[in-house]
Image 1 (tube, rainbow over the protein chains, first blue to last red):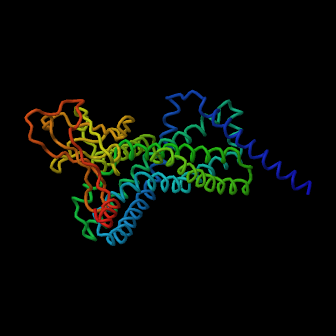
Image 2 (cartoon, rainbow over the protein chains, first blue to last red):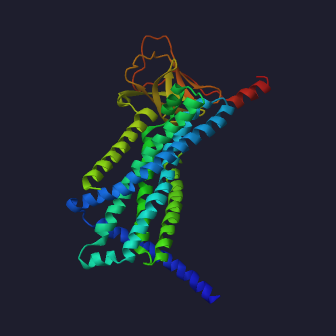
Amino acid sequence: MIDRIASFGRSGADLIISLGRAGRFLAGVLSGVPRPATGFPLLMKQLYSVGVLSLAIIVVSGLFIGMVLGLQGYTILSDFGSEAAIGQMIALTLVRELGPVVTALLFAGRAGSALTAEIGLMKATEQLSSMEMMGVDPLRRVIAPRLWAGFIAMPVLAIIFSMVGIWGGMLVGVEWLGVFEGSYWGNMQASVDFWDDVVNGVIKSVVFGFVCAWIAVYQGYDCVPTSAGISSATTKTVVYSSLAVLGLDFVLTAVMFGNF
Amino acid sequence: MTQRTTDITVGLFMLAGLAALLFLALQVSGLSPKSAQSTYTIYADFNDTGGITPRGRVSMAGVTVGSIDSITLNKETFQARVAMSIHGDVDNIPADSAAVIRTSGLLGEQYIDISIGGEMDSLKPGDTFYSTQSAMNIERLISNFASGK
């Protein structure tokens, strides 16, 4: 019994310690002054692997989610004879919620896990400590470009996701099911506000990108340097990122759209 | 892959993101550069504003001519005071026009329709509508009908 209480307390203390370490880690990464000459090519390389290579999965998922929204929305709305409202339904759902959230979930699975595994393996093969031996700060050389790349790439991916989704919804709604194209775009433009809807969606994706990239690089940097440790760190990245994204999404939605 | 190719692909990626943002701004949210045109504010006092909300539509003969700015309670008359900004180029609304709250369709959103009067003078910035007609309340209609009023 005493043991159980002790282990409960220890896990609580561990949680707080790891949160503190993650915060200290973040401060260490961000406080390094970026050197444009060396930092920029590193950032480009990471933007390529985190952003450009994620584009395929983002575009395909966005297309299909938009098409499903169009199909489902049409079935539900046609019961009320208001299938012309399908445009605003698809646009608002994608721009406000599904765009940022689904992109962040895919991003955590596609790019976050890769970041964790890469950094974890660098740690396991002692590349990070040999960098320190050579006087190169691994936080600045390895971690910072990856964190910034995630932070920059995520909003871009989310915007592309929303756009492709809206186009996919138009393919199904207008081309296939025969909703009038003018009312598809017209209803959409009447109900979507650039600052309230589009910009708030982009802000959401910026927050998600930051959180996902932070979790991914921290888990990689902090993992137990064994093969089992890397695998559990990769799992933790995906699980924690998904939970953080969904939880934060509720908070952000309540703050942005909850003022009735 | 050389640094140059990486730079070019990442550049294209960022361009695609910008283009998508532009698409969302222009095609999806209908943001147009002329939305920053000059407006002036006029007021209307309603007994019941029903379901109108700030950012709602103000129209004239079905054409949108402005939007609702704010809805506040006038504590002396216990009426709702609605401030609406009207596009600057619509500057000849007759002074005896009425502001009417209407519903688009059976269950659609509510908006303010300006029903035109005949006076030669027109409403100036800061003026208040002389007459208003409050939101139609279906429940009140039904209860009036049921009690035979």
